[in-house]
Amino acid sequence: MASIYKRQKAYWVSYMVGGRNVCRSLGTANAREAEELKRKYEALNANGLLPQPSNTPIGPFLQSLCAFWRQTRGGKSAENDIGRLRRIFGPCCEALKLRSHTPHSFRTRRYEILSAADARSGRYLPVRKLEDLTPEAIARYLERRVVHDGIVGKTANHLRIVLSGVFAYARKYHGYRCPHPDYLNPIQGVERFPEKQPVIKYLSATDIIVQLEALSDQPEIRAMVAVYIYAGLRRSEALWLTPNDVDLEERVIRVRKKEVEKSRWQPKTGIDRVVPIGSKLLAELQVYLPRQHGTWFFTSPDGQRWDPDNFSRYLRDLNKALGHTWNCKEFRHTFGSQLAQKGRSLFKISAMMGNSPEICRKYYAALVPHEMHDDVEF
Image (tube, rainbow, N blue to C red; front, side, top):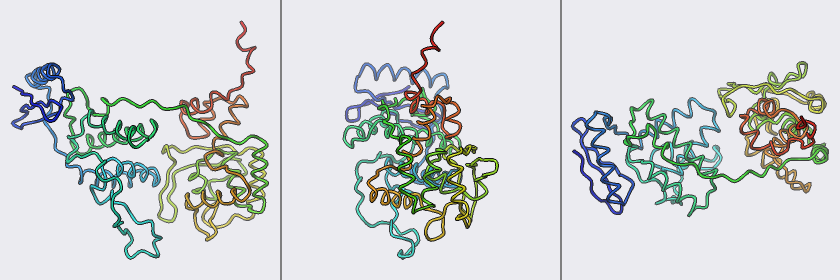
């Protein structure tokens, strides 16, 4: 038998599974709906369809998850999602505590913990164990972030995707069982937020010439910008290129997993790809190649691999002094946009850019030439 009771505004159900008492929120303040849901739980329990409850304390679990992500995924991808976990759960374990931005050479400890007050205190998901996260609780949290914090639908959906990965990992490695009888993963009960159509900014053919000529006195930066524009690489993909990745004889750039100087990296999607080098990019790289030296195809002023944020800042300052505002994302969009306007297949564009065809269709389908009147005559 199950029983229901009211806690604040919502009804909860209490029942026994395997000799253990389980309490679950029914996500409703309506007494009639609560009674119907109680009978559903009783029927499932009578037929042995309610799983044995799991118990997953949130702190140790998230510590394990962060270590797993850092070990199995690319550095930036893992750190981005760990940052999203911090925004959701707060600094509830060592891996999610805020770190100092002070350069390593000036720190007293390598991983110095910030002593400043937590600006997001009181706005996290207040859970002690993973089983406390119901679809209703997650939906309310995301709604609160959208309404009160002003995050856009795309950001809310990113948080939703991260939480989906949290539960998938918990099911596979920690024996987690979703308390809700209708779902294996609570995110199944959380609807996606609507997203606005993205505004794509890219350079025209004239803009490309202006941008490259403006960097003539910075040959290495010019070559890097040319790679972003004419090969459509992501920012980190170009910064992780080694001389072996750029083959001017076969005219290809290989974007692939690698381990260099004890640092491992992989493309955002985890899938290697080959990008052909067009004639314009070939001419730029042939001019740059005699200047290339060292472990990395492009090196920072101190002879090391560029830090992505440092490179963006350096490029932004250069362009600001020249009266331009273009950045790496716009350079990458230039590649996809210009090819789409030339009538190239969106499938081919997606393969070269390392995106799914759906993403390319979302960004570039509107740029496909409209001069196709003959194609619709029959």
